[in-house]
Length: 383
Ligand SMILES: Cc1ncc(COP(=O)(O)O)c(C=O)c1O
Image (cartoon, rainbow, N blue to C red; front, top):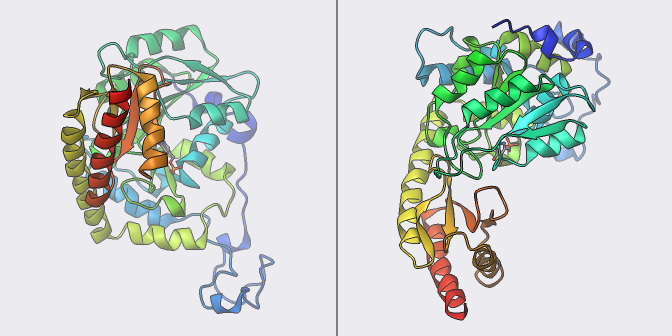
């Protein structure tokens, strides 16, 4: 393996000098360096929040706390611990996905690989950047929705223009955590690009690959505050990667992408008791997920197994052995007559007749179970 980051990152980006401001050097005093409005914000009642000042571009305190948490909960041994230097923050992991594509893929020439059924933003970002997407499907035949490691490596060997491989673990919409051995096999046998492991839902099952970024030079692990931390509204995504690639990503990002308000709440999310609360919250979601699974799969016309896995905060259930017509009708009836909104996923590869259902509060889940049973029964009686 001869991984060379300077050959993976686009040359102009690899050599980019990060934007620097006077405040990188001097933070205190009469601050007349950044063309802010010293008279304070409008409306006036926002005075005192310091919102007339630009936010901190580096967010070291947040990154350090998050790195320490992933070190504390790591299942790997003998790997150099993560530090703030292994991290770059984005406006949600959606911005991180876009940034990694822009950093590595030459538009109109280079490609990414994604593994359907998967999260839709990889292909949206690829299109926006004029980057082709090569698809290597997950294994659907045995309902496992694992990565087909051999097929992936074979495709990568044949196509040197593929610069990024996106694995979603646990998967969306599949809910299946990808076995770490499969991820490591790709990392060990491919040095022509970067493997991006999107772990938006990892805290619902544990076993993050983030610590691997100090073992392999060719991995990025994406995480977010949107799911297990319940902070989708503040928009924080995290890229864990080698210090060398993190430096590149930090150089190319907009300097003030994390707002002061976002930063304030993100820091609250990494206080020690907040990590405990997040873990308890994930446990509660998992308990409710089991209850939902039992109730819904006991209904007529719902297959008695989940599809993929149950490693996230949602279920993927198949209606009537893959009946898209019934599943779509149920989806519509739930939304329009019961005011319960789930997601129809029946057109995704291997997900025929599937609905993706996010685990709600116990009260919301009670409503879902009741309305799901009622609407499905009504529909089935007219089939
Ligand atoms: C697999 C996956 N990755 C990333 C995201 C985006 O997360 P964020 O809110 O951090 O942009 C989602 C959101 O649903 C997701 O399902």
